[in-house]
Amino acid sequence: MPPKLNRRRAQAVLSRIDEILAWEVRHENERDTRFVELGKCLCEVRAGQYWRLENLKSFDEFLERRFPESRRKAYYLMSIHEQLPPQVRKELKQVGWTKGLELAKLARQQGQRFESATWLHKARHMPKAEFQREVEKELTGKDNEPSELIFFKVYRSQIPVIEQAIETAALMLGSDKSRGYCLEMICADFLAGAAIDSGNPELLLQSISRYYKFLPVPQREVFLSGLNQKAS
Image (cartoon, rainbow, N blue to C red; front, side, top):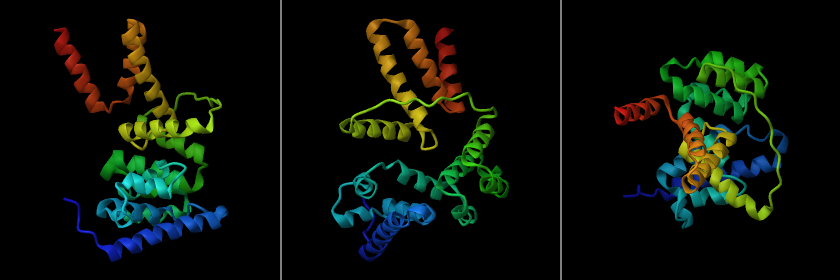
């Protein structure tokens, strides 16, 4: 059963979201400074199903109206609100939402071991790219592998399909994964299907190997255990 709709509270939260989004448009040079409050409001809209006040069918439809370019940022802001403790969120306006997302990754993985003061200090003083590398090193225990930028042109009519595919992959893999990881997952899925159709075992092995990399450690152990049982 859906929660009882508090129309007064719903109207107040929806109006606040619109106010913040309009403020960001007017103050381009200062945008993203209200992302903490925006993430909190979005989480409340989802939990209370306030989108029903506008006769919408789902929370995703609500996000499509407020974030027409991409719903990905909305989910990122919600992740920051859900993963970080209140004392950390109070300091995030000083570092920006992209660094806040990196902090949320750490908080989700480390739980009680998350040293918020240390990482907030790093977020304040490190350039964004350097901070992201530092977080990745902490999460994986190793330095990032070399990366490259790939450029290719798409038609405007193709963008909605591409964005929807990447957002769907992000929901499957977790919002902490980069768009590059999401695109790799989509390509690996395509190659796996092509390998089965063509009977190419090498291509299929390559695709499965890439899928394996996306699994969390406990699921990797389950996967390997199942293979060992079948082999024996």
